[in-house]
Structure formats: structure tokens, C-alpha cells
Amino acid sequence: MFEPLIGNQRVKDILRRMLAARRVPGALLFAGIEGIGKKLFALELAKALNCRTPKGVEACDACSSCVRIQNSKFPDHDTDDANKKKIIWSEHADLALVRPFNKIIRVDQMRELEREANFRPYEGAARLFIIEDADKLNDQSSNALLKTLEEPPPTTNLVLVTSRPDALLPTIRSRCQTLRFEPLEVGVIEEHLSRTQTRTKKKTAAPDASLRARAAQGSIGRALSLDIESYLSQRETMLGVLVALTVEPDRARLLRASEELTDPKRKDEYEPRLDVLATLIHDAWSLSLGAPRERVVNVDLIERLAEIGSRLESRRAADWLKQIEQHRLGLLVNINRKVATDALLLGMAAGNSDKVMTRRAG
Image 1 (tube, rainbow, N blue to C red):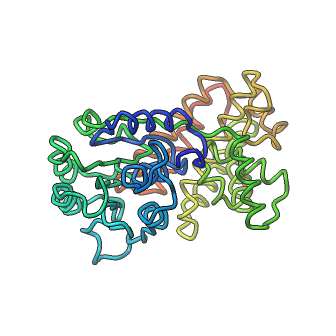
Image 2: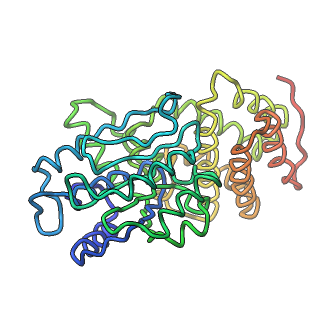
Image 3: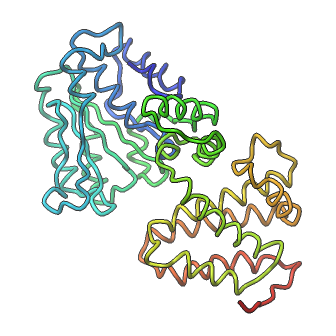
């Protein structure tokens, strides 16, 4: 049933109306930030389409079909070369997943999906294929997918899941009905974290739970996986970058921060640190505009962020956030990360025309 899923009531209502009218589109595009539960909604739709004893238009969660779909475990085969050209089948014969291999969805996977989509359901009423991280389709695999989207069989449904819908070909987006998932409210995430702690009997300090919910920026998956100690360490480093851009202009400190960011030993922290930097900039900018505490993610740093915000022009903050986003796009191609990071931080510093950046020893 959809109700136990967290948030996005509007999406639940739309899916219920589709099921009630028996007009579920052959291709749906679930778009929204990572970790918000888009794949869980897709699995719930698969249950509703194949449930043997439905409750109204929703799944009963008790029949053998629902149980097998609910218990589906999709192994991470990203490092399994033998499976890179395959789609992954669940415990239910009519539910499968396509997942990127080395950050790319391969054309062979789409060709297999095209073949399988033409078969009638083996045991249920509909076959459902989930394409995870659909923005990882390349030109070849996108064109192969289009063949299926042009004339989808009536008993086959495709759900494309992505946090970057604009990265998909316009021809693919135009053939899907898009459902946009909204970020979850902080209070909703905090409540879920509290329930999770009760079930698992793990104790989390209230301030940590609040920070975890705020830092998640609407993503329940991010909130559950966030390592608070690691986050605080990353935040302190990125706060130093922001100080070196505003309160105490210092190019040398920025270059040291670039070295730390691009340290191969911390490669998994690179993009999370960029996330933290963008969040700190947004917090400082919001405070400079008089935003209330409730809109600040890092509320425990409010005094330090307010000082930074007092020296931060809106135009400069907007430019910095744009530069960070452009830098992210550059990371998708094979660029020298150290050179690009130096250019990012020094480029942000160069915008401070009203300040003289001084090199400091240290």
C-alpha cells in the first residue's frame, strides 16, 4: 500500500487515480532528488499491478505476489563484469531492474529490456521494468530504449527513475508521463528518524537527529546514511573555505583546501564536500536576506554564518552556487580534478573585486 511510504501525498493520489481508471501509462518518469523513495514507489506500483487480492486499487501486502515483490533484493553488480550487459530480475518473474555499470547504462541492457518487454506476464497482470539512474543512459542505449517507448506492449510498464531528468533526451522525456517528487520536510524526516531509532533501539542525541534531518535537504535516504562525525569534519573544512573567501581572504588557504579536497584517500568525500560547501553558502546567503532560523540547515553555526552573510552580496552567492554546479557538470567528463578544483576555488575568490586577497604563510 502507498500510505506507509513517506511523503509525496500528491504522487500517491495520482498513482491511485491511474490505477482506479486502469490507465497506468506504459512509461513513467519518477523525477526527484536522490534518496527520496522513488524506487520504493515504483515497487509499490508493481505490487498494485500484480496483487492477487487487492484492497481497492492498492496492493494487499499479504499475497504471495506482494510478498515476493516486497522482499526483492537487487544485488549491486556495478563491479561484476559478467553482469554488466544484463538486467536484474527480482524474486517475482514480472519485475526487473536496470542499473548502470560503471556509471553507464549499456545498449545491451536496453536491447534485452526490449526483448523482454514484448513477452506477456508470466504470472501477474503486468510486467514492470525499473530503470534506475536513467540519466546514465548514453546515446546508444537511449536510442535502443526509444524503440520500446514508441510502441510499449499493453501489459508492460516502464518506470524511469532519476534525480537529473534534464539529462535525458527530450525524445525520451516526451514519451513518459513525469511525476515529480518533492523534497521531504525536516519535521517529517525527524519523525521517521525517531521511529527508526525506536525500532532499532539505537540512541541518537536530539541535536544530532535535528542536524541529520536538516543536512539531508529533503532526502530520507541521505538522512539515514549520513555519518554525523564525517559530516561535521567536512563541514569544518568547507567553512574554512567560506571564511577564506569572505571574512579573511586568503588564496593560500584555498589552495590547501583544494589539496585536501582532491586527496585520493578522500575521493569518496569529494562530492559530499561540495554539497556541504553549497549548503553553507546558501545558509549564509539566506541569513543575509533576513531568513528565519527554520530555513537554515546548519543552525548550530548561525552566528558564524551570519558574520559571513554580512560580507556576502546576493550576486556573489548566486555566482558561487552556479560555479559549483558547472564544476559538477565538468566532473562528468574526464578532467583533472585537482586543476579543476584549484580553478573553482580561485575563480570564486577572483569575484571578490572589493577585497584584496592576500597570501599568508602557514
